[in-house]
Image (cartoon, rainbow, N blue to C red; front, top):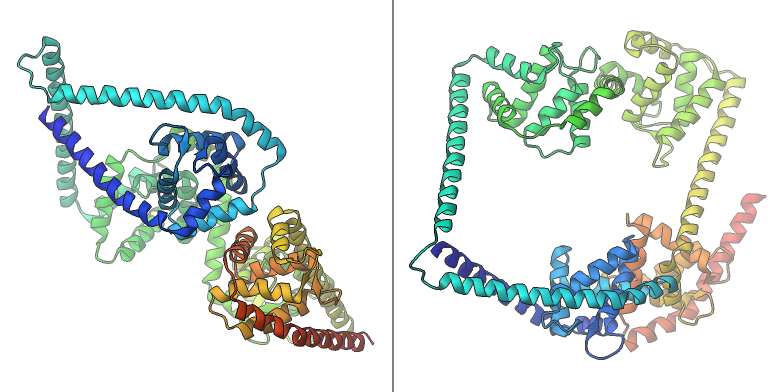
Length: 606
């Protein structure tokens, strides 16, 4: 009883301290003008309270951007009101709302300012469909009743808990026989648990003593035998991934399997997708070396003890899956083993240098095609393979291959022809040293193929960018961002409007206003395709897509950032006046540069 009373006192003291700290944070938040503005955005009725309906309609706006289902929004909103409506009136006042925002920012690991900006931005830009609004309003009456009944239950439960606590504090002279029986049962159970734990520790201690006395060879055999469950003198992916999970690495099933595939591939010298004793010893020795101060014997002891007493590893279902796909898994490991061996093979690097004629540590289309031509003597097939492999491996559109990609290329080429590259690598190098010259016909095929390849890559890049722009145009946020910039509402963003919009976020980055003016003019020059000194929706979308990619940002995040800055930041009258005074000069400069660009294009066409 004393323990119980003390524990309850501790909890109430802890909760009080926590609440005092949180109340201080809420007080800071209440003094913050942005939070009060956010409250007003939620309180659409202007009553000074946020009702359940108002909370639901606004929460839905940013839930939609995260792909959260409508029913989940309804449930989460009711739960939020339940947690923060302290006076049980089915509404949130400013204090309750501030506490909600403070806690929500902590849960999301965001600064309070950043969270307020995010919520305000989501409400401004978010759009609920008419169907959603109708559905949510229909649910409000039901959910209000549910909220009220739940709050009544909470009040009743709190009263009952308080009464029980008061009873505990009252001194009792006589205990019933039933209470004594429960206490006796508890003692018996506790003793049984302690006895089990003591026995378990004694077994572990005995095992440690036995392991300490065993030789290094014995320890290794015990460890290998524990992993080799099917006793075939090999450790495969199923067995190693199970051991990795038992070793307390908290790996998920898929992650553990992928790690096991990589580890086996690194040490599988005979390419049989498993580790024999010697290969497994090399793996353990590498693990020991990476640990630094640990010896092989200590590493073996640690792994054995972990495997014996661990409750982790694969369950029966996961084990059955790996057994069923054992052949497929072995194929993946073999490919990885061959790739890793080739990557570290000195003759492969020599071959790469022979392909790399300009010694820039990459090989382009012409170098790939010429290298394959030397190996085969057929320029048609060589250029076709060069094109196929570059398009497959060059994901970043660099139009060249690194050493790692080159290794993949060579393995693919010779695997397709049914040859084992390690058996013929010397012959391949001899052929590359052959002084065979390229004839006129082969050179012509090479030039034409390179032009076709470059044209295809450029066409793919243009199609990809057009696709991204179309996605952006279908995204309601981008259209709203366009409207924010288009202050004249004429369906175009003029040079002046673009300058004022760009300045809002340039200012936060500490960029000088003259630099903003120069960059804005250059931006309009690049994206104003029809040369009318304005941007339409297509041109603006292309600009935002490229700007997001240049800054390694998700397109949606970039739109949110630009909209947030445009809505929350403002310019001083002096700054606005200065920018307007520069517009005429910049417009003339832009027109002049567009004219020069047109002349250059005409000359190039001629």
